[in-house]
Length: 391
Image 1 (cartoon, rainbow, N blue to C red):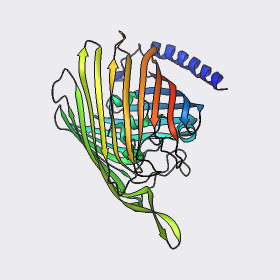
Image 2: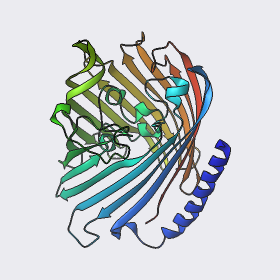
Image 3: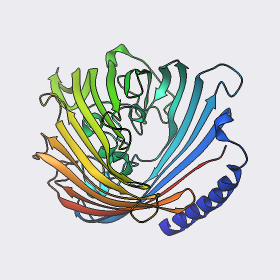
Image 4: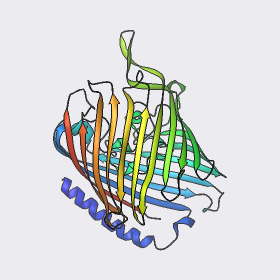
């Protein structure tokens, strides 16, 4: 069944690739009022040894990105509307095979068909304002080099995803964001989000929003420095702080009138991201990244996060390939463990127009996503990425 499903998916991708390659030649996208992009990611993941058990899972993630430019539509200047539905489907290897805490695949989410983002943005000079359903990780705590890896922690620090009710993939939340481009090299941005998105069980399409002061708010503030040292070897450095006014920590329990309840409390933290090109020669380059995250140990079971790695681009005489190695380490204070460390090695290359292949190997030390003591896990995955612009 899995084999036939993959063959059908690949055939569809080939057909769409041929079509999109033709359609993109007809008109310059910069003048279009409406743009439509499609992304499909497929992971074929095998847990070879360790973890909960050996086995195979097929995972899929699809989304449609529809943007409307109000100026190109002859309405008003500086406006943009984003409609971003998505679908996740397939197995859950971290939950059922590996038992890791950080998440070996960044598309694992169960089976959902939902609205990922739905917002309006208005640009006024060097200010941008966004209101609506948003993904925090689309703009904050993001590493352009780290996101090339498959483990979830390289996309968003585990201090966000595991300690807080954070509006990130797959469950986003309504919020208000502002970014201020102070200069070519400095940007400040700030957001406030609903403190507790309604879960998929009670909100299957993520279109049910309910702002309740009992759930508090999540605020995040970040300053970004770009190309501070030199313009040739580009680099981006981010420092951010966040505060959740009424967070529900998974371990913060107390007894009230004989019942066990979760405690709501203020929670906060600090993070640092660094992306730096350290070598460049024509289309060949080497980029490195570093991620740090800190939360109070007394409030959170993941008080420290450290991640980093290096990517080699174009080393096989093709600008569309990269080879990288990275690590992600979370300091933990539960399940009788002190840390979980993931080491990842991958290669990404362009197979056909708009289709990438990405074989990936991970070694996970002390998988800590369950109450069981698990052996170190070794896993292999093959990711297929297809993306194109229809309009």
